Every structure is written in C-alpha cells, then in structure tokens.
Length: 415
Ligand code: GLU
Image 1 (cartoon, helix red, strand yellow):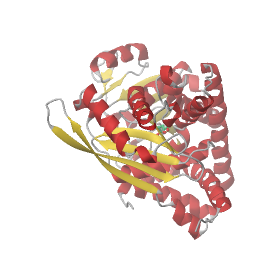
Image 2: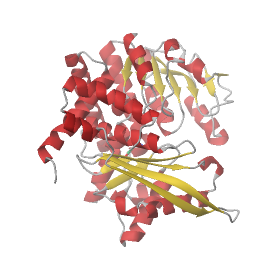
Image 3: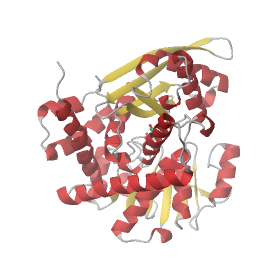
Image 4: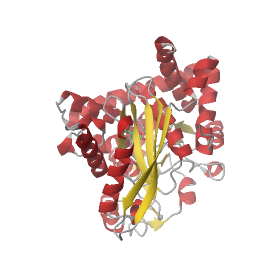
C-alpha cells in the first residue's frame, strides 16, 4: 500500500464525496485500495556501454468496469505514490466519462531529455517485457502521458505483439495512425479541455470568444488546448513551460510560438511577448486559467493570487485539496481533472473500439462522438453539483463512485 502525499490528496477528495453518498464501509475500503501495484527493474545498456537499471511501475487501481486504462509517464520525479494516485484518478475519470474501463497508470523514473532515441526504445521494450503478463487488450491498455508519445506507443505495441506472436493493436492507444491509431486522438485531451472551457463559459454566462486565457504547460495538452480555445476567438495571453514563459496582453501568435518551440524546445525566449514566471501567470487577471503541466501546482502558496473566473484542469491533480477549497469558497469555477481532461481517454476508448473492430472512423465521426461524450459528462457532473450543492470536483467523484460502487455491489464478493 502507499500512503504518500499525492495518494493522500486523492483520498481527501474521495472521502468528501463518499461521505455525501453515505457509502457503506466495505465498498469504501475496496475503492480506497489499489488492486495491483507492480514494480520492475529495467536494465538498459546505455550508448556509452554502461548498464543502467531503471525502476518502473504499473498500477492497476481498479478493474471493476473493464480493463485498466491509463498512460505511462517518463520523468525523474516518478514515485509509486504518484503512479498510484494517477491510477486512482484514471478509475474515476473513466467512470465519469462513462466508458467501460478501470483505471491504471505506469511510470518509469528516468530523464528522457538526457537519453538518446535508442536508449528510450531499449528502456521501453524492457519495461514492456517486465510487465507483459499484466497488460493486454482485455487486461490493461497503456497510453501516452508526460514525456511519452506515439513512437513510444508503437514500440510498446511491437514488443507486446512479438511476445504473443501476432499483431495486437488494441494493447495500447495513442499509436501512430498507420498502425491502428485513431484520427483525433492526439488532439483529444486538448479538445476536451476546450469543450470544458466553452461549456463553463456558457453556464456562467460569459462569451468565450471575448475571453482571456492563461495556460501553464505547452506539451500535448497545453499546446492543443491553447490552439483550440484560441480558435473559439479567445485571446491566449500567457503560456509557461518547464523553462520559462511568455506574455502578450494582445494575445500570443500561436503559429509563430509553435515554430519557436519546434526549434528551441521551450516557449522561453519567444520574441512575440515578454517573459513571465509561473507565479505571475497564475496571478494574471484572466477569465480562464488552464493548468496543463504536473500535479500540485496550485497550492495555498499561489491560490490566493488567482484571479481567473474558471480553472480548467488539463493536468492530473494540479490543485491541492486546500487550494481547491480556497478557490471554491472564493467562487472560482474549477472544472476538475477527471472531467476536464477526460477527452484523451475517451478517444483512447474510441481507438480501442476501432482496433477491435478493424474498422476506422473519419476524424469528424471521432470528434462528433467526443463532443457528445464530453457534453454528457459535463452535464452529469454539473447537475450533480447543483443537486447536492457541492463543487464540481466533489460532484465528479459522486458520479464516479456511484457508478463503480453499483457494479461492485452487483458483481458481489468472490470467495
Ligand atoms: N494519460 C492520459 C490521461 O491521463 C490518457 C490516458 C489514456 O488515454 O489511457 O488521461
């Protein structure tokens, strides 16, 4: 079991909703324990000839609704506590999104910015070989997360397929299109963030086409969220990433910024704006703030300075529980991660369905289905929040816990 701070934050969120639901103690216990935690050591021969041993994790938090689903991240700060919390959040996210998956997550402690492509491929393949018995289209289906992409997914798919002796596309999602990926998957998390921001503005009665937006993070989620919210007419005035940030009150030119990032690997130093720090970005007088980097970024150290009307959580776990309470008490409309960023896993579900059917949809079909699923989830959470007079995060947990608890009761206890 794990009792670290990130899993602790997840438990605080869970407990608040479980109390309101009057959840019975037995189901409460089951849903607050990870089903499986796997730790593996992955030896890799590095380019300099030396052998390094990397620690990797895969956690299957709950598989009551279906196969475990969730990404794999490569980061020096990965811990079992973090991966377990992220796997729990995937469980609630899939339940809120109303897709037939449980929750899982993987991570490897490594610094991919200091590794060659060959080293990353070797590490990925060895990690997959180490967890091979636990994954599969019916068991556990990984996907991209922080610092992993479609190429990494292709290596996972190939390694798994080599071991089972046939091509198995549905073992992983977020793959390149040519080998069973889905149109729209790369943009899907950002598209869901955009839909969440748009629906929030509609509910609160302000016009998103005149809104100002600040985004923390410019990876897959931050960059696509900025682009798609910008396409609604909103002005993206500030963006920060791991190295620095840029601000332009007239709105950043995202096409030029993307060119800059392709060359420099960071938004820092972009000539179309002035530089801005993370704390300055959080304190900007904008309508919408999108944290799209790592967990625990909005804490009591910076939450009091936040002026945004709406916070749309593109990242997983970006807001600490006390900072969340503070924002809610001040009337900030926080769209929680397990709803706001669920567009990614929802389109992963579409990819898994297409792989299993061997029949692929047009981009319009994918985006239309995502639009419908996101709006269904947003409305379910909003109605629950109004009914119980709670914040959206508690409401999302109420929706998720009710769905997983109902199936747990129906299936009953084995042995
Ligand atoms: N890593 C993404 C997330 O945190 C996507 C997971 C998936 O598609 O399975 O939601």
